[in-house]
Length: 198
Image (cartoon, rainbow, N blue to C red):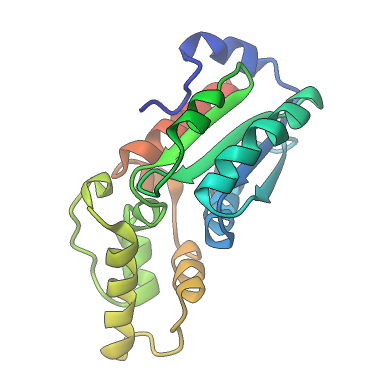
């Protein structure tokens, strides 16, 4: 599944956007990751906002209406969701248009975090050994949580114990440039954003 369902031909039209981006996400942890991507990839002078729409089906159902309103206001809309979640595939088919990028995180967004092994090591005190690219991990959420729970058990990082803490700790060191080299779905999103900046 491609990152831009409406095809490469629309990149030129996207390039004419007024520098306003809206990222639609599922949950609060996804928003943390997307905000890090925005900080690292968006040039100065570009206005970017994030909007949390809940679980994947709610996100995909509401994204069509929300995207239409935002596109009418001059936004390029980026929809980020976890590909592994049970979802309505018909809703995904409705998400097409010249100012719309659909960016599924292969399996789960945790795979994007795990793709930067250096950040995971610095956050947890333990080396993450893969597999790489992290798109290959069958259950990235489990792998991510298991890695950090192990760090807590081994007293490498006893001060972090909640899932959100694990996200925040990793994102302190997470570099989208390093991560995209080890995750194909993240790299696809970054390529689309890079094309808009030219």
